Length: 96
Image 1 (cartoon, rainbow, N blue to C red):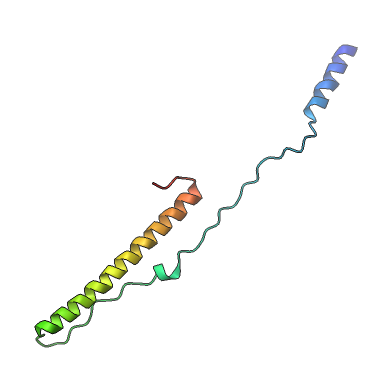
Image 2 (image 1 turned 90 degrees about the horizontal axis):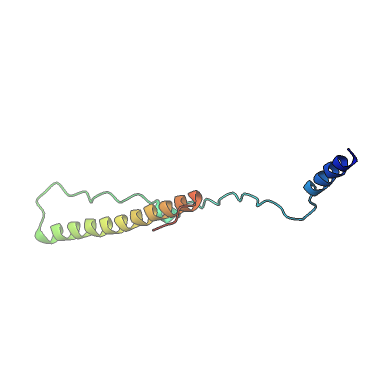
């Protein structure tokens, strides 16, 4: 009986490890907002005058609309990439 008591106390003392090891603390992910310049809405198409346009006017309006469309497309692609990167970081997935 005495031997069992000693084994019992030895087992209890072995379970009371006084090491300084700690469990890792979960770090709350930092969610950065999408930059404001990526959230600017697209410019609407140019309002055309209610008359027949000259060739020069057509080219001017068309090139202005195409330029704005190109800038807007690049901005929205950057926005989508930013959100995709942020979501992958939060979920722990690797970006491709």
